[in-house]
Structures are given as C-alpha cells and as structure tokens.
Amino acid sequence: MVGRYSSNPVRFLLATFLLATSVQAEEVAVAAAASLQDVLQAIAPLYEAKTHDKVVCNFGASSALARQIRAGAPADVFFSADEVTMRSVSTEPPQIIVTNRLKILGNLRTARRVAIANPNAVPAGVYARQYLERAGLWREVAPKVIPAENVRAALAAFEGGNVDAAIVYATDAPKLPGVVVEGKNAPDIRYPAAVVRDARHLAAGRRFVAFLQSKEAMAVFTRFGFLPPLRPRSSKTSGTTSTPPARLRW
Figure 1: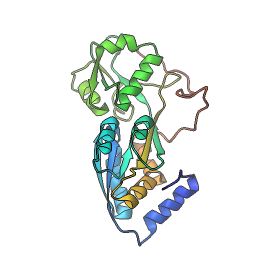
Figure 2: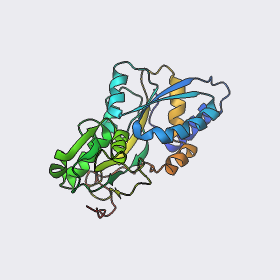
Figure 3: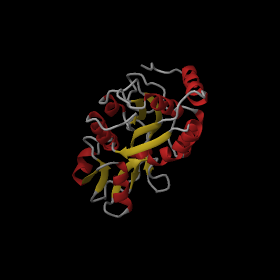
C-alpha cells in the first residue's frame, strides 16, 4: 500500500519509477473525468516518452466511470473530478492533483434552457447546483435545467445552440465569453487521482499518479487553465474561497 505522499516522497517516487532502468514498461488504463480529456492527451505522450509505458484513457462522467470500475471494468488509475465520487471506489490513498472553477456561459435569468451535467450525480452538475443554491438561484434556474451526460455534453449543447446558457468548468471553455465563478459561493472543485486497488498494472498506475504530481505535468495542467491544489481550509471557511464574490452579469 502506498501511503500519503509528502513533497519529498513524491520526488523519490518519480526518481524511482521514472529513472530506474529495471522498471518494465506496461500499459496503464486511466479512467478520467471528461473535463480532463484535452490536458491528459497532452500529458500522456510526455509520460510515455519517460517510461515507455502506454497510456490508455477512458473519459466520461466521474460518476459513470466509478460505476464501471465497481462493476469490474479494467482501470489502473481513477482520476475523478471530485472527492465524493473517488471515495465510492476502492483505491490507494488519493492525491489531489489540480483544482478548477465553474464558468457561466450565457444569461441564466433570461435563458429558457440551461445545460449542466446531471446535478444529482455528475460532479460538474453537483458543483453547479451547489453554486446556484448558495447564490439563491437554484429555484429559479432548476425548471430550465437540461441535464447532460457530462460537462462536455453540456458545453456541446450550448455551442450547438440547443440551450441558451450553460455552466461548465472554466477549463472547458477558456475562449468563450462568460463569468468565472469565484467568491464565497464558489464550490471547492478538486481533482483527486488514485491507483485502483485491483489494478492489473499496479506499478504503471503508481508511476502515472506520481508523474501527474511532477513539475512537468503541472506545467501542462497550468497551460490548460487548471489550478494547483488549494491549502486545506478551516471548518469556518470550508467550501468557500477567500476571494471577493464575482460580479455576475445576468
């Protein structure tokens, strides 16, 4: 079992896993949140070049991926968009890799249809509902909600003109005009990654999770708009941020 890593053990793992010539290349199956698709497709070749492992990703809603893993679908690493879903899967101790923010596309008040990921199951939708409830907007927006399979589907619905507004991750729509949700109502969006207990390629899974925490990988995450892990919050501030509330344009 791998314990929780501190900064020094992470560097040790990287040195051990990535530089040791005795390590045999393997295939690592990664079940990852849909919002991680672009960034992991950029990170995977860097990891493969260092280790000669082959990364095979399965992208989807974290809740759907968790169900698949619990049903026996092959996965060496689970990279979820939230910690609640991560805890529903038997894994080694998870590591918070990056954080994210929500982005509102369109005008929620005037919109007739609003796309968000399923607010009862999919992390992006759960986060969106948390924000709307904290902002006192859920009752007004809920009748307009068109639940999507995952956050990328919500974005596609907005871009295709099938809905008038959407709430997605800031990393999903960096070039689209909208409002990034910050301030006291913003949900704490954290992405943990962990090796699945029944991983077929345990060593490869551990190498990949270690690489995700490297400076090289973090530079790619930053380029795609993800933020580094937040410091733990006190019980008084849990679930909020210390930045002033954003002025939302309705």
